[in-house]
Image 1 (cartoon, rainbow, N blue to C red):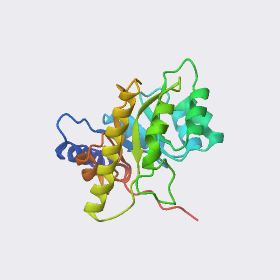
Image 2: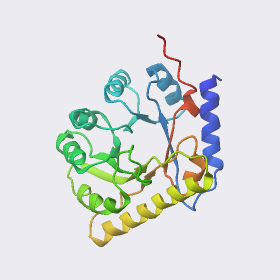
Image 3: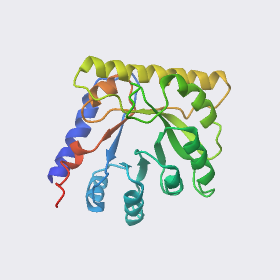
Image 4: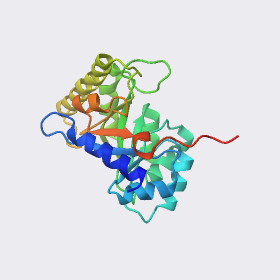
Length: 235
């Protein structure tokens, strides 16, 4: 096997051995930003279907190159209003709904001949000034509005907690995300809004994957641990 295959099998094996709440399914999202189409093909051939991209133009180029492959494309980067149409037309998921304007534009721009776009609300769970996303106290109101947009399916919440090597701080932030997820799902039901599709908690990367899964993550976003270090930029 190649090094890439070795890394992929190691991370999937690790995910399968982490203790988790009973009945919780965890899906691996392979973060393929800056990676080549050939690298994506190799990981896809190992059985990986879902890939995450951060940059719209780079991603749409790769989506066109790989249009004959059965790939589920997730947008996980910051989304500018002037790029929302590209996301609406090319992706299966958008994890980074950080304001209502973006949700409305995606709904308006989603082609009628495509399935509804799966979306997650991005939460700034640690109230960091440098990060986008709804504050925790804003999420329920946003979810009730986004859940009614006609061309979107609200699937859950997404977060990038504050970077820390302190396991207890990681667990605190990730546990707050799980509590918020539970509260949003309850609020949807209380308002007689469809809540069956609200099943996703997108959190956890290489540094906090184990804790995230233990705290209820259903999607973990892993890049370097699969694809290896990014090549150094040449001058």
